[in-house]
Amino acid sequence: MSEVPTQFTAPADSAVALTGSTGRLGGRVARRLAEGGVPLRLVVRRPERAPKLPGAVAVRGDYADRAAVRQALAGTRTVFMVSASESADRLVQHRAFVDAAAEAGVRHLVYVSFFGAAPDATFTLARDHFHTEEHIRASGMAYTFLRDNLYAEFVPDLVGEDGVIRGPAGRGRAAFVGQDDIADAAAAVLSNPDDHAGRTYDLTGPEALTLDEAAAILSARLGRTVTYRPETVEEAYASRASYGAPPWQLDAWVSTYTAIAAGELDGVSDAVPRLTGHPATPLAEIVRGLVD
Image 1 (cartoon, rainbow, N blue to C red):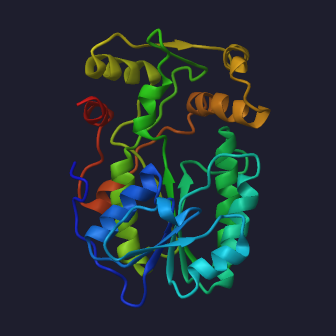
Image 2 (cartoon, one colour):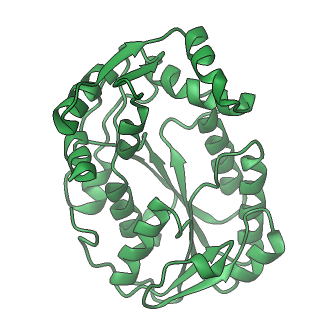
Image 3 (cartoon, rainbow, N blue to C red):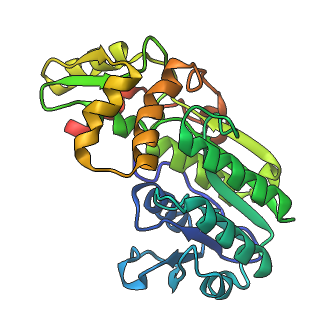
């Protein structure tokens, strides 16, 4: 897939503000919009690290710094909000950012959420996404939620040095989605935000796969044998304890797999093709792109 497959048109009345432009997803969205001539305001903690894009201005803003965010977003109509880095206080940061956006007069917030976001989601971080969505709903701003399934680019990282994927996912399935597809969908929404106000889109790949099936795809594409070995929940915690991660992070790691086992990441949506005009990219094609 080309880096900028489609041309997008700017909203008529102001620049679009984006967070996360120094990251993989936000950077993809920023490049697509800039290529389409959309004026951008890139909200970043360190403006000198922002990508150099035509029509883009970098401004300082940290999610937890409401005053800085208000100033950064003043005069913007539409904001693209990538979730903050995983942390114990991420929800607090999200709420501060949303409040600052509303105070700055933002009219429409497009938020990158997670597939199956719910207060009782098995995947612990999906609960943060649900509560962020609820805070956005209560803010008075128009909103669009992009609920991504697990990133397809993340799947090779599940493989240990011995070629084994370990986790308590059982025979559950996940509809892994490519970041380029998410970026195309986000750019389409941001180019005509009014058409998507109040909408929630589940962004998935074209098929839901078990980890056995994902391992077979990785084996074919990586040129080495990859297998999936189920763990119990207890084994999963024990095998990850040596990393010294805090309890909330261990819970997030393990619950990624238990959410798959529970069927909460299963299900294929047509949102990617509807929004982008092209089919969702299969895992095999994404992995091939990573190794070529």
